[in-house]
Image 1 (cartoon, rainbow, N blue to C red):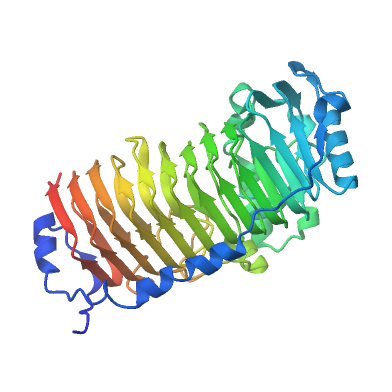
Image 2 (image 1 turned 45 degrees about the vertical axis):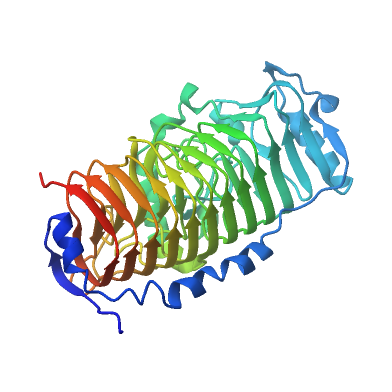
Length: 464
């Protein structure tokens, strides 16, 4: 039987959940049993086969042999740099951080270097902002810029890693970083991008107030971040930029403060995030691909991303795409994840607007357990931000499939799908065989077409 399609040109009325279930009970289950979703998931083994963590020669370069003192007071910046340079010059190996507390400025990794932090070791990053100069090439909220160095940075390197059971402590809450959360500089940078100012002339850093990220390999191949515990960040925590073959595995992120996203792959290809735990001041995972005109100029998508067996606590969104979508986001697979905090706003969040443009498509989610966020599934083409103008960069969002998930107590809505208007719609969304146990409000679907709600199970929902 052919699957029946539903078109909602303006507004999908707020119906009681049981009525929603009845309204869609005549929809054929053939889509759920068809070839589209299974064939999509069949791509995952090939993606995972390409994501191979780097390996390193069996050589150790212990930072205490290069002058590091683990008292939490002595400046170990030169010791880290010396050990990394020696490891790289020898052909690679591990730069080992032994037990103790080691204070340092930015750490710049080189090819074939594995920064290994043992169980009882902590790297403390200085709160002296001047230590993160001179400026380096990076992105700030997905606009290219010359800015303060990330706390851990690698530029155009291959085979780099951060591993171990130790701790990386940004000390961001002890300094001034978070007081820079808004201001004229971020607006100025976006204007530079929109006016095609050369990146070499977008120099911020000293005298400016754009926060650096914690960990950012940039234009790198074969990246591994595994096992470490990461505390706080000035800005986004882990944000690979223009990278290929990235594994983030078994990492614990605990960050508070503005814009402290947990893991934001930005214009990256072939990324695996697995067995991680996130508790953040913003989105836990947020896939990016450039902002506004500058992102369209660069035009590098994020594609082929797999998220598995991860745990999401506090934050705005659990698994998110956007809002910086200019280069496009596609082929995202998330499975077997848990979301269990009332301090999480959205379990699944997809967001963009006519200034960001680009697209979010081919997103597949299955077998996830969601407890107590505000929203279960939230999609919008009306994400609020400065500069959004209709017709500037028409965004696309569609071919999104979410199935076999359980949503327990939602303090707001099970499903919220919001296109921009009658012409700029979200199209092609399937939510199938999910259980929504209870929610404060009912679904809202506006300016959307080809929305399939198939064989879902609805509990109690009452309108406010």
